[in-house]
Image 1 (cartoon, rainbow, N blue to C red):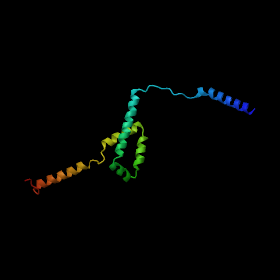
Image 2: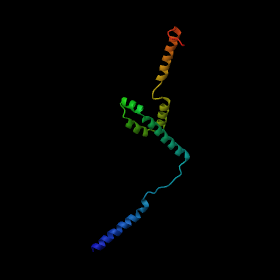
Image 3: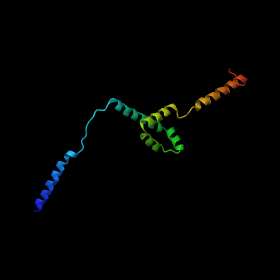
Image 4: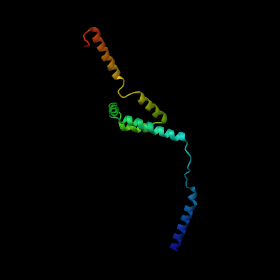
Length: 125
């Protein structure tokens, strides 16, 4: 009797499993247009470019000086939207890490040299 009850239970379980096989979700393949693929590649390239700039030693030091953890900054870059990453990349390309201090220093040195030559305190031989 125990064998028949176990057999009935097993048969009922198998019937239940077979009838529910149609309810499994299936995966459908679909074509992906070229524009979508290009946008994904552009985003990946932009994120990796920004993260490479954030990985530089001078940028990491500047972030640390400002109280920002560089690893957290890289994680936040990965979470940005497409528009935000494009704006950030454009800003990073436009603003160099050192600023424009070199041009100011050059202008000051040239001004001093011109003054010294004009007053006769420095002569070219």
